[in-house]
Amino acid sequence: MIRRHLAPLAIGLMLLITACAPQLLPEGPLAESPRAPDLSETAFHTADGFELPVRTWRPNPHTPEAVVIALHGFNDYSNAFDGPGEWLAGQGILVYAYDQRGFGAGPYPGLWAGGDRLIDDLRDMVSAVRAAHPGLPLYVLGESMGGAVAMTAAADQPLDVDGMILVGPAVRGRPVIPAYQQAVLWFAAHTVPWLALTGEGVKVTPSDNIEMLRDLGRDPLVIKATRVDAIWGIVDLMDDALGAADALDVPLLLLYGSNDEIIPPPATLELLRRLPDEPQNGRKVAIYEDGYHMLLRDLQGELVWRDVAAWIDDPLAVLPSGADRVDPDLALAED
Image (tube, rainbow, N blue to C red; front, side):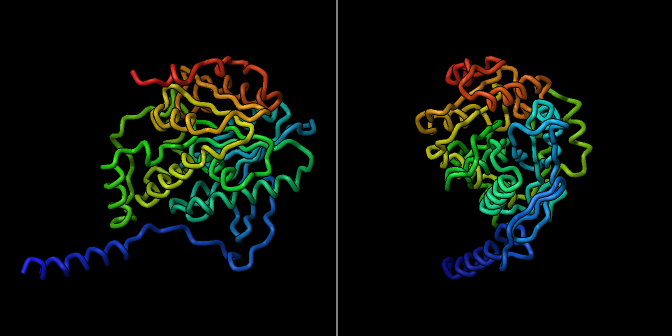
């Protein structure tokens, strides 16, 4: 008798889960007949036909000495690089930052695009920038989620770049997430994927730059309420990024704040443990003892910008801040 009643219930639950699967952002209008991506000062047209907003910081009147493609973090957008972009341009470095699909003023804000599509967009952007600036050194700078996109893309197959800069990369994958949290997230993503969470009541400090954080709170393009299936998606991406670490054999500058509560130290230590042997052309790990997750926008942000410019100029030289002399195992060890 009990089994007879449980069977319809089980079938009902399965139908509910199937009907409420995580939703992905739709493909672009040219998905069936993709075109070559193209780039302007204000827009990046993807191969499948989406237009993604672009911010450009161009050295003036000097000819650029290098180019950086900057990828923002989760729920953020290209405005994240306003300060560092302007400063780096003053050092002769051309910076492009685009709103990744599903964020900022891009299409379908709030819907998760899927890691593969974010990776394809980065590859298309690299191709478009290479075509626009042949011969110039090209770097990808990924902050948080942007770092995870860059890592996964480079490990899947080599990116046509001269180096990679990861700022607090999002590597809080399943190996460092408690099993009960994974179970709760799976259930929510497959039953109420549309449910939006604000994070209200969660006590974390993403930066010591309080005025900047207040500005983000007032910015309508910064996503404040996150769909559960988007959270599921970013965890998938972080999982992939952490799994890709052992194939990340590129010139690399990894920047991390000791006070990062978004991507906690155990996740970053796991990333460092998984990286392959250091490439001959240079890898640096810089630990900022007073830094937070939003290193580029912290009160000491310019210190980090200087390190980025110095590494691009000479990846083997000691960084101006000396943050690359800090032992990560000691600085990030749990008390």
